View: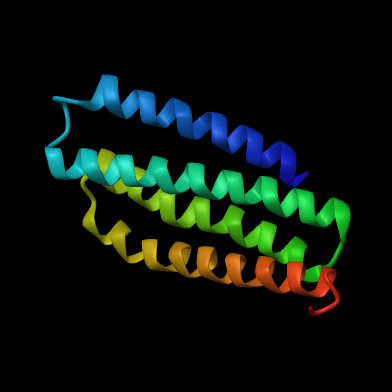
Length: 123
């Protein structure tokens, strides 16, 4: 499932990036456009991380690898989602949600590292 989600979220990140570059340029203030581009960039990074989680889950299934995948999904929703909404609406309080997504990303990477460590027998 993480592979499918990763591929779909990567496609959505490409679409968001193109939308930002072509449809939003000139319509958003430069600082809000930069926020939108950050959301698309981090969405792509973590869509690729989902593909990595899918690979680990398929080779060495573990709770840590599965949880890492779900944390990447949550991070995309919270981090990128809040930044997309902030940039499109200008509602600044949405920025308070963003760090929770960042924390999910960090936890996902740490759990993915742990899953890989465990899969190698801790060596």
